[in-house]
Amino acid sequence: NIQHFDDLLLKLRDALRQPGGEALVSAVRGRYQAALIDEFQDTDPVQYEIFRTLFADADRCLFLIGDPKQAIYSFRGADVFAYMDAARHIPERFTLGTNYRSEPALIHAVNTIFETRPDPFVYPEIAFEGVIPPEHSESQPLSLDGRPLPPLVIWFVPSDAAGTNTAAKNRKTSARMAKSAAKPLIRRAVGAEISYLLSFGTAGRVLVGGSPLRAGDLAVLLRSNREASEMKETLAGLGIPAVLYSTASVFDSREAL
Image 1 (cartoon, helix red, strand yellow):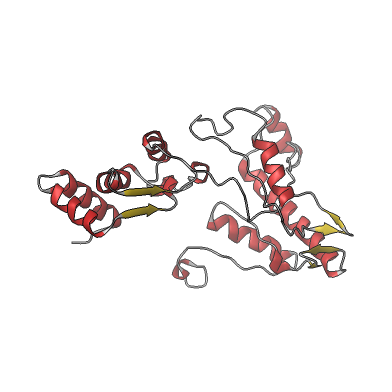
Image 2: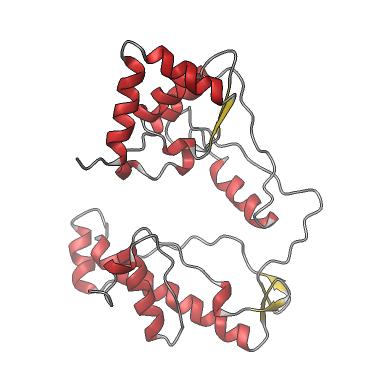
């Protein structure tokens, strides 16, 4: 008798499809005059069918808020194509053209990268629309000796960085480095950069927001909990304190096991 969230969704969808489903639709619409669905890019086809059946009506308001470029939950069943299908059937669209959360220089850098080629996210339906900072932005970016540091830096790992044997092997595979060889190099490079910045922060030469840079001002975004743990170990080896922020259960941690 155990039911998961998927079971609940399927049962509701089936109930709406079956004879008598109109009564359920009427009851829900009678209670809710509008629906606002945030993070819609993480919706799957079953969820979208439910929302469409309940609220896609001229007498009801259905707001779908999302960004297909942020669709990262395919492993949970999220389907960006459900978003694209919905977008084709929505008569009115609104876009947030001002970014209030990022440094102006970083906004400009991101715009520069993605505005230089058509369809940067492969599908024409997933367009990149450049944004602007607020008109009166109080910018206090990361700076070294009073001069702002670049807002965005792209690093390339040379194919021979992992050693002679790996380099020789890579020459036979179009100079591509295996992830298993690249990841330790990336961790060490990131750790070294953080150590460099913090050392200058301690000396009062690197500032952020007008104050010396501290370890708590930095964050490293990684793809998985495992990569985060490995990065934490790398930082610990450099004497840099770090904590993990994760949605994983505490009972899955190494300490609990």
